[in-house]
Image (cartoon, rainbow, N blue to C red; front, side, top):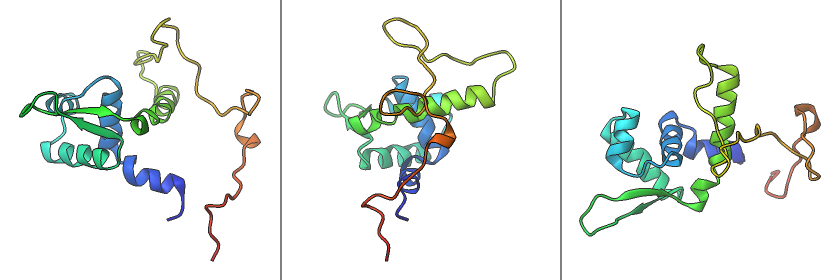
Length: 143
């Protein structure tokens, strides 16, 4: 399907994959730690990690010869951070926990909460949903 959303979902649209990426952003790097954090079966985890490596989202790094490899986010992987932040913000707003917010996304240096992610115009104005449209680009082929 010639759709950027559909193509992205082919790679990251599965629940375990998004949770693996979440944990990678939290600093998890080892296979065993992913498995422990997620409670995922070894074969499913291995398949998802291999796919993320094959797609260039994670890279497998061996610290020592014969040692267990680590999984590090690549630049392509780091580019998914806004997607995960937007999902987390959406989940906190529309599926809140009865006891309050589960976690806060803050700036590392100041510990101040970051702004809610939202579309902005070229001049920095926040845009509402009705102010945004999609227009065809050169990658859309009409046969």
